[in-house]
Length: 126
Image (cartoon, rainbow, N blue to C red):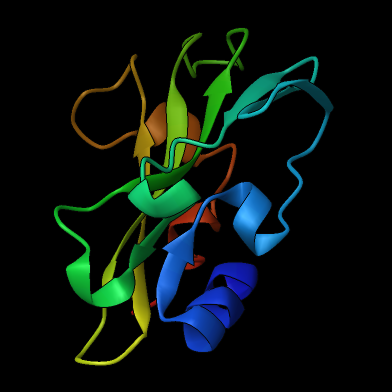
């Protein structure tokens, strides 16, 4: 998020991983995907203008980062995923982030996957 913040303050836009200089963990499998033995990481940013969208023209909450479990992790089911979405914060080039966990084994509170990454929900800021 610090890379995205720096990019937004310098350009007024949110950018894909290549634009902001982010490299996900693991081995690169194609332009937008990386893989480790446990997770697949995806650059899910779907901006226009060669991977950038002006902060003031963000529509919805584009997903910029996703990690999907390649295997079951204790009670956290295979294919459960962690995401970071973005939205404009205020009237300038500031970006608000929302962290979310989709635990395919616990539809109510994501307990099974939250216990694996107890601080993940705290990394987002507005």
